[in-house]
Image (cartoon, rainbow, N blue to C red; front, top):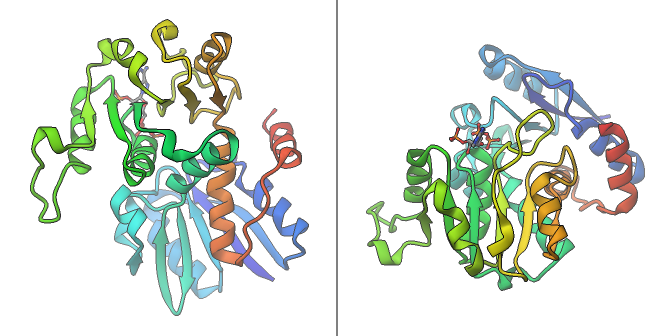
Length: 284
Ligand code: ATR
């Protein structure tokens, strides 16, 4: 039987085992996906042990996504540019790290709503790990990105990561695709964007909502949230109430998992309503 897993700390609330085991059963694969709680001090030993025990690979979640970069033998392009690993494949005696979060964000939008090319200008709220994956997807799409974060320095740092030439030199201001705007001025830019994304934890169960007034928002702009608990966050509810198209954040989880599954098993499993309902039931 093939073995796959998700490693993180804490890990008991992860939906990944439910999701992957659902697909494993559906596609008749002789495999099992488990959740393994790994403390940071045990990360290297655990990965080596999994490699020795013949695991196909694993997903990597908080707090190990960055630390994993120092452990793997090979880092693929997307993980390198995001600076975080969310999937490991044990291949040809090597530990290989990649990242499917960016793909997950992109697939969620494309499969639910629109042609990605329509997104010429996006406003990304937040500058943490999730923002990096979202910005990577938008940057590859050649979208212009406005970035805002409560802690402005963090947004400046992220914007710089996307503003270098091939020699690592900072591009002139007018050539940069990612521009930082002030946290208190984000409403001013809403009339001019095609996509609004919340990548912060605001709006999640137990957190305050994102404080933003969308009345100035371009009426065709798509609004999406990486938070999926609740499925319709206060941000999405506000956008929906004024007639803007919305895409919830559950899809990003499902599509990053789809990409992981395809890497390990060579099958891109279906993401459909039945699966969404099954996962939503397990979230209650
Ligand atoms: P992740 O890897 O999930 O993105 P993270 O790196 O901790 O998590 O980032 C969380 C994001 O949510 C950050 O942009 C953070 O803003 P700061 O950089 O200012 O901390 C944002 N965030 C969390 N709580 C917030 C709050 N109460 N108000 C505004 N932003 C908040």
